[in-house]
Length: 225
Image (cartoon, rainbow, N blue to C red; front, side):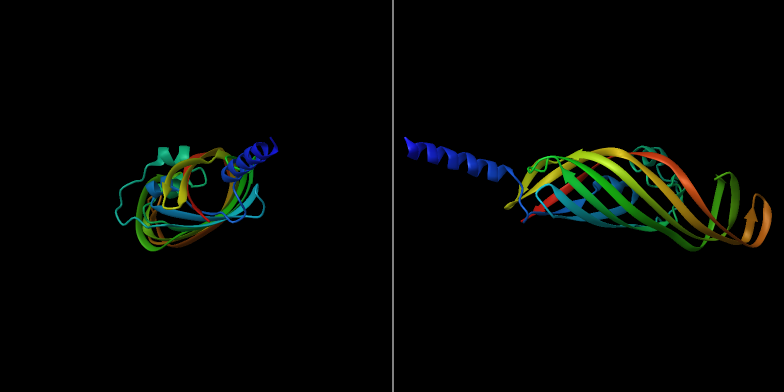
C-alpha cells in the first residue's frame, strides 16, 4: 500500500517540477512589432529566484533613406515611448537601452508584473530636411538633431507556449500598461528658412516632459536552459 502511494507522490512531484521554471532557465526576447518602425530590440532575461527575473535590453532603429512619412497612428497606439514627430521624421536613427525587473506570480512564469526603465538616443547629422507644420512651424534647411528620451513603464503580461524549437521552447508574451517620459533635445539649423525666414545658424536646446502613454504589444521569448 505504501509503495504505490510513494510512486504516486513521486509522479505528482515530477509533474509539478516539469511545469515549474528553474533558476537555470534564461530567455532571449525579441519585440517583433517594433520591426514595423525599423527598430530591432533584443532582451536577455535571467533569474534571481523562481519568481523574480531581470531583463536587460538593447535596440537599434535604422535610418530611412526615403523621404516618405511613417505610420503615426500605429505609433501612438502601440509604441508610446516614441515621440510622434520622430516617427514622422525619416532621417532619425536611434539606440535604446533598457532594464526590466519582472516579478512572476507563480513559478511556472505565466503572469507577471514588470517595470521597464529605458533611455533612447535619437540623432541625425547634416541633413537637408524639409517639413511642413512640424511641432507648429515650417522649415527647409540643413539640420542636425540630438534627442535623449528617458522613461519608465508599468506593465502586466503573460507567457504562453508557442512552439518547441529543438529541446527548448518559444513563448509569446502579450503585455499592456502605461508609461511616463521626458526628453532633452538639441537642434541646429543653418543655410535655409524657418517659418519662411532666412536662417544662417540657429541652435535650440530644451527639456520637455511628455504626456503619459499607453503601451500594448507582444514579445517572443526563446528559453535557454
